[in-house]
Length: 289
Image: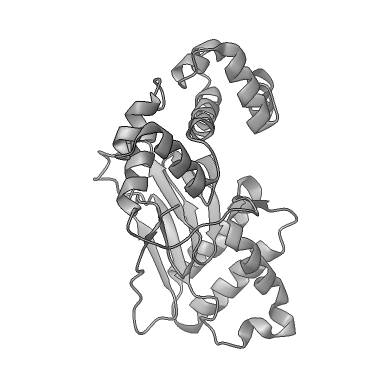
């Protein structure tokens, strides 16, 4: 993968940064940075990429992204014209692991924080009731000043470390490098796929987007993402189908074709392989929740 190195602006009189993003897609590029990122989504839905993991995101989700782990959040197109919104889309915190001193994480008392930041190198997803608890801490960080802001961040990280269960996003074998010469190519591929996944994408078509011949494109994409382009498309389509299922406005067969599948058996098999449930059971389980 060829992520873009993103420079995070930091004020000289603060040890870390916290902001509320009022517009979607403020950093809608495949990028990485040395700072650790903690993001809480308040509004909007879309597709998230963390390392080699692809999932849908929704209001209430919280993600902790470790240093130098590539990531990308793409809001659904319906939010693009919502520039006049008075509600924040997300709260975003950026900090270095040594923001409180070089030796801090080597203290015995901070071992839980050190461990959770190590796990964050693969990305950590927090949802539902656990996310509600962490969101309270994040808002305290945003509202506080001075030494209290630092204390609140430490309390937030300890709360994450003490969660009974966390979901790691990127696979343990995910590898990437930092050459930036092909950032634009990967972004073009991602954006084209997200804008066109509901129809059949010909190999020649996506290869042309990357300015490669088909055979070269297949090798290129697999080398940089760890998966084939067809598997990448299936992941996006299943994520989108989950969104439609939860909206409960279409029957399952309609959702199959609306998500870009042209074969119900293939859709059913892929859905169960990725979610662990059939589409019908997935809908029933969320309606009962």
